[in-house]
Length: 156
Image (tube, rainbow, N blue to C red):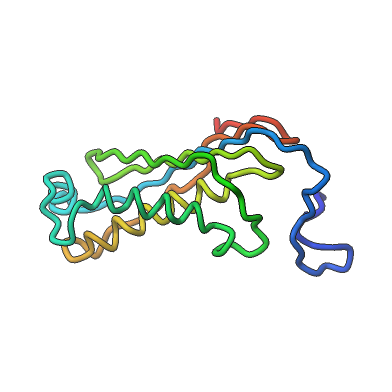
């Protein structure tokens, strides 16, 4: 069984000491989607949502969230992000978000990418909920990570 790194020998939670690890360039890409009614999708597409430009606000929210990940996720290291980008695409069912986070450091940026995607989609929901309260957020996952001791990984 793999040892859980956030537990010490007595089973108490602790932040992993990464001080002996070399700093490397690290990147993580995460995705997720929000499905919605055609009415909500069309309103977002045409810029008709009363709260404003849904995709622009959601993109900024995702970037802000990535920068605050260590304040939201217990035991997560605060990281100096060198880049965070949010891609948003409208499809027939709703909105797909892709977040790419990058840093040069001693630990990975997977949590930052996942937090960015989650917050981006929650913001879409918040801004369009007056049109469609039945929207569903899902399929949030890590697509790829590069750098670090464990090397590169990509979802099949």
